[in-house]
Image 1 (cartoon, rainbow, N blue to C red):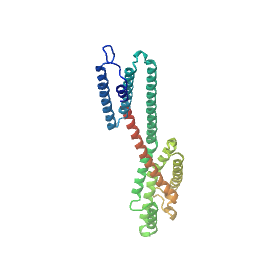
Image 2 (cartoon, rainbow, N blue to C red):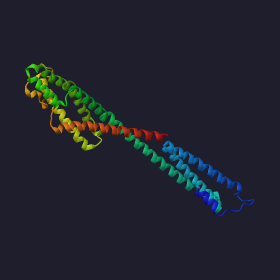
Image 3 (cartoon, rainbow, N blue to C red):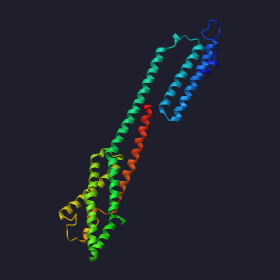
Image 4 (tube, rainbow, N blue to C red):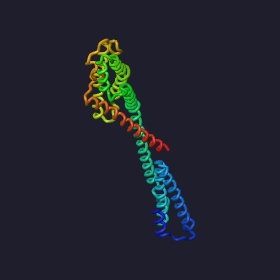
Length: 297
């Protein structure tokens, strides 16, 4: 538009028989520039509607080229410059530099997106994905094991009461053995697997030191759990072979590790942390995949 304005408002050369500019040339400028502007504008609108960055980028380049051509033609007509007087070599070099810079920038952006996507894929496949499934399975199994009770402490308290009553003693023993089988064959195996996943993929932590402290506390909890399981193996009291139980056998610390509020909060925080991080990474993964697809056209 600026070029057309320059051409129409500037001093025009005479249109004699020998002039290189004529009425046909004037009309050509308006028709060509107008048609090109409408076409480029239509493509740009399509890019905005479709959300295509490539269309918008190509539209910007086309608009720039159109503006340069119209301005150059206008100056040529108004200043009576010869085409041979235009520094084509300098223009070619400038265009080449601009093209190279643009391509380099786009290539770096694509590489950055791919690298970020690869890192997120590794985080999801090796750390947060397995942990997410592991903790969900553990939680569902735990709720099934203590079905009808508020928590493990409540479950063990009921089992102890049943055991202390001579008429329901066998039920108390059954409840305790049921929990110990669950911990020995399900929960402990899941916890050990989660510990291995964390140890082997510490380099993939999303939140660094803050998250490392939470995982460290969980590993300590699992190690304490290993001591409990080892004591059961030595006492052969995992599957009810032990004939006589004592009151201490119904204490939570002897059946699932530390029972203090800090440990309970840690286990809850771990599940929530893994769930939120997994959801965040999946959303980020999908966003990067869309951007890569759009850049590829």
